[in-house]
Amino acid sequence: MHGYQRNTVDVDVLIRADDSDAVRETLEIEGFVWDKRKKEFRADDGIAIQFLLAGDRAGLASEVMLPDPRDAKVTTTIEDLPVLTLAKLIESKIACGMGNLRRTHKDYADVVELIVCNRLNSSFARYLHKSLRTTYRELVLMSRG
Image (tube, rainbow, N blue to C red; front, top):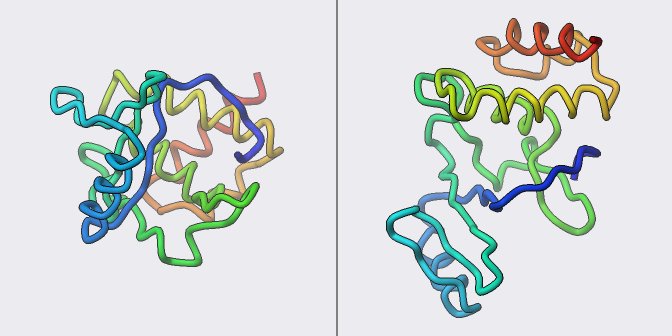
């Protein structure tokens, strides 16, 4: 939604813990089936929906917490859908990738593509959590190669 399109096998939905039962009921009514082993909902066509809970850590040992989706400062509307702002998306991707080698390459590659597509530079770091700014600036340098 922020200018970088990639194939993905799932949809991450950021919700408040208080809303999880209502979201779960809605998905079940719409025909999605809970896969307990993978901790996700699946549609008949194979699309997976995973919940991210506001207030949870964005990464294993991260100082960054996933934001409250009701906070107007962290969301924007693109194509009539509420999504994280570019800064919050990049912040979440970097935080999720830190300390988890299985996620690092995918999430950091996504950030590099977002940097390129949105013509971001090092000064964009000021919008990110202070613990992520150095990593972001390193990714900006890598994106120039």
